[in-house]
Image (cartoon, rainbow, N blue to C red; front, side):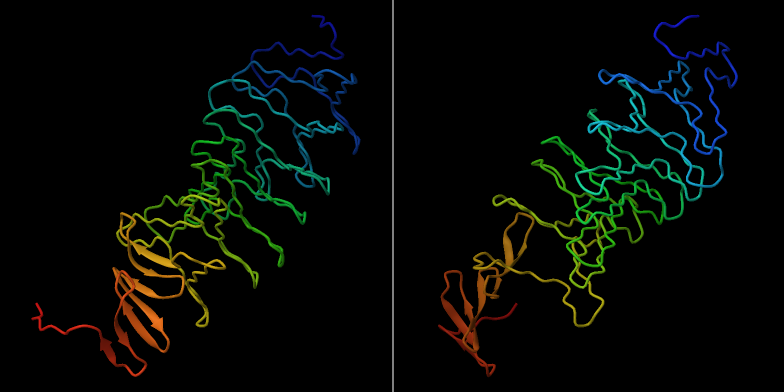
Length: 357
């Protein structure tokens, strides 16, 4: 069989068995078993192409048999400023297809490694894109049911780098920049570790441009145990374990929201390990006009408040600082009683006899 325009063509026509169309072998420590070069400077040419018609087949496979050393099964390299070292393309429009998949049997192995060696620029070690409405740009799966496994691990050595960056481009819908899931009893869905001991580092940062989006969403699905939807930790003396920032200048925005559906649950808890630390701080803006804190019912009606000046309000009653005394005010601000510094209660109006029930 003659193939027009093909430098080397190998055809293994057996329909079973571990047959090989083309095989190359090199005994040199720097050699190449098979080298394909597409010299044309234009067009969508291909250095090496593999095609398999089998439902279980492999189009191109590289096997590094050495049991030690920094070996590489398949390596792709591109000198173009817009090139791709390796591209995997699964063109089926349905089914559990995979553009690129990597596997490692080693206890210290890595299934897929992406290495962007440039020391500047918006480089990406691994970039995944999916156009499907139910697709995943990058999916990492750690199949071991125990141990400190990681579905996806990203590391950046740059002072402005990002270990893992997830971006959901859609401007509406319940989109997710990065999603992590772990089924292990000691697992972590998403782990972000900023190891620098100074600077405004972030273990995990999430951003969403959608009107219904979520910057970072953590879900602990186990129905028992001390699970955490999102856990943040900072070892810095000026660090923040979890930071929520709602940057919109209007609307009912929320920096951090906590919700619990358990009959014994806690939506938000502040806990300290040092006796001199403060569990929860509410800090207003310069020139604060709104209340610092509010306790509301399910309809959003304030039942008790701490106003901008630190005065306590319960229902329609307000307790405010009045010099060295405390004044009790009604809804329109009228002073109805004063508790002085000596503990004396001064009442305005008449004291009526009324039986307690």
